[in-house]
Length: 257
Image (cartoon, rainbow, N blue to C red; front, side):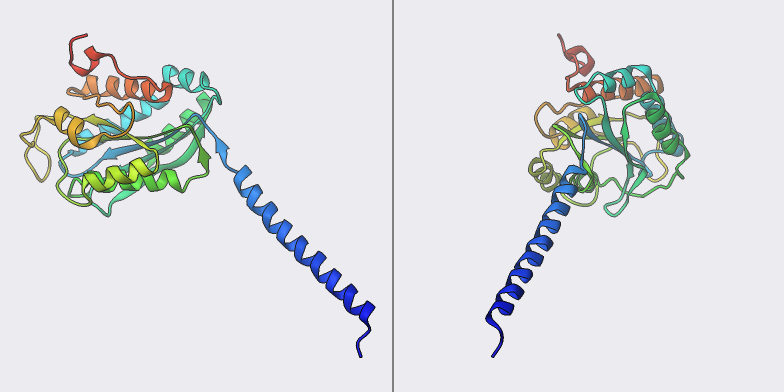
């Protein structure tokens, strides 16, 4: 017959070992939670590089974002936040299956960080796609925010484009995903009168289209760009507003004050 005291010691040792394993697992879960970095904003810069955007425009968009990210205004705004840092990724998109990060998530809290991120954007190979799948781009941005290692009170997708959606997930479905993830989608319509590689400019009021169909969430706004100089200024202004959690003035939206 087994020794009763020996059996009780074995049970006790097993219980202690089991508790240690559970605590270790729990500690791992807590460590994983603690590993998430608190930032002021999680920002996806989602940039249209479909063939309706010609190569010159695509490069100009990049240059505008690179200049804005490295600007003193943006860096000062970042450092003025409660945490003094944001998390940002730069994604180029076109077809429903074409969303590629030219620069993956990075925390920016200093001029050096901003310049390092901007240099990654500038150095990435430029690849193109045929169609304009805005809904898929929004869904991709929501997933990138959901799966990253950051926590922020504000989550934003800043989406640029030079035409309406012509392929992929519906904008209604994409908006539902954004709402579920507490993500705001802002719009930067690029107004161009030049022909793209595959299609002629779309006869549509792009400002109104973005206002009615693309943006979503509390405080979402559209800030259009019509000329090369205005494009660079619009990107800079838009980033400053998004980082600050502010809204553009009525005059910036083409409305009476």
